[in-house]
Length: 210
Image: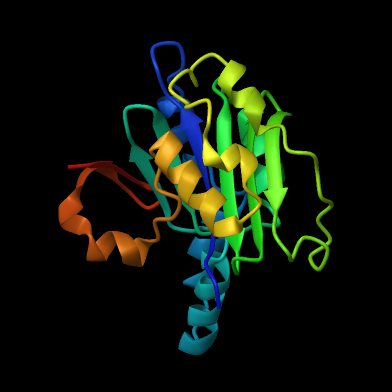
């Protein structure tokens, strides 16, 4: 089995700082979920009560927000390769900055792109599993990132622009953008000494690298 993850990374600089807006998005639970959580406590049968709470927990996934000098990276367990594109488009309509998305499924599919204001700016979708999962191959337009304000740090000969090898492309993206592709709650706990916790609540945990 290969790697499985989906994450997105919001550009952060003097022009763009959507941190507070992002937090407000994750503080808002789906309508009625809080009421249903309280209602679950009414059930006298402990098994039914526990199953109800487990069902509701599916709507509240642990989210880690990592702050770095260039990006606000979001690791949301509810995201997957099948939803990362559409979800980042929705979120980008509420924020001002460009958002990079990155997702890998079993090393057979790698989705990488940039969205802003609900529109796709650049993308590259590669892998032998594209057809199997109903993903149409698209012409790579990631070279356009170098023309965008805020991405002037990119090298002109970046490997992620030219390679169609999933692992090579993924490694190049991490290196060029200085992002962490994947960070689960379990991985965070194992590396907790490498992070500083800035804010922690039921909706999300905000951290930075030490």
